Image 1 (cartoon, rainbow, N blue to C red):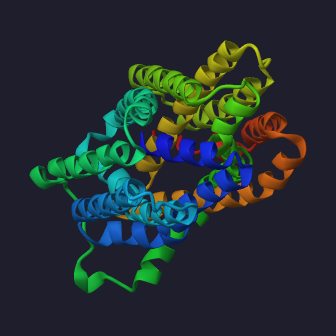
Image 2: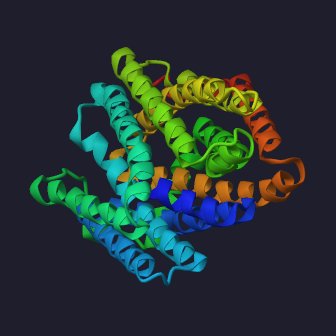
Image 3: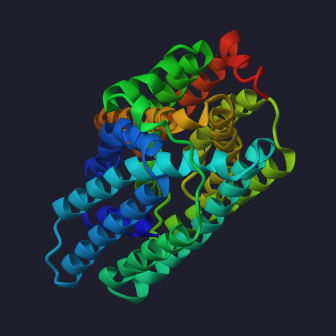
Length: 379
């Protein structure tokens, strides 16, 4: 809900591709730069404590934003600063949470656990966008954002109550943080399939990520919609995520890598169809957005399961954070490249080009035998 409110505020206040692109970059770059450190610390220290501290700091940042909005002192750079700090916290929380999953569920249940997780994310997405639109229509934006503080602190409660098993390297066997990070890097670089998969994901994100940041502008500029239409689009996407998560949970895919490549490829291609929908047929754009969301989940959930299956748990924090880092580095670069192009050709045709190009790139991954066979010996 917070993401919806903040991005819509920027869209409504500026109507600028550059402003939205900047917001996307400041929300991604800190996570990219600190990701290796976050993953290394998640393998060395208590993952539970890391998640608690990250949530508390994020809540404090949002409290500052609330005060600035309520005192009418808010400026665009304030949002950028707080988004950067929250992104930094995600660099620590993300690897700690992802690496904990494999210690909480049986190995044979990992695919279904990933599907259930994606289903829950879909449920939250469905609720968040309409609630965000409702909140900013009924109350000052500062009060709307206060819900984020409450839920962040609420998220800390289970971490205080439940224990998370974790494998630790004995202190006498520990090396420096840099060498520990390099151990995680060596796992990826030394595995030809993983190395090529990481490269494929990086290039795909480089091309497609600007679309997710600029979607409010597409709704406004092409379809002539406002906050309710953006909320509807996000809600349909959330329902589709639920459907995708349920499918993954029920099917428990075995050939994980095929699901990853085909899911991401189909998601990208159908994203182009969203923008190709006529301006007076917003319903068609919504339908294609739903298909794209289902396909994305059916690729993303198996990706996490694949990594949790083939990477030893005491290295998962570093390996997973490395994936987050390359994605977070690719995204702002993609935004920087797409911004001038979008100003030139318009946001609609930018979407079409990004969707088609990223879809073709994903599907080309199937030509690599090393990628196709990734995980076969571990499934």
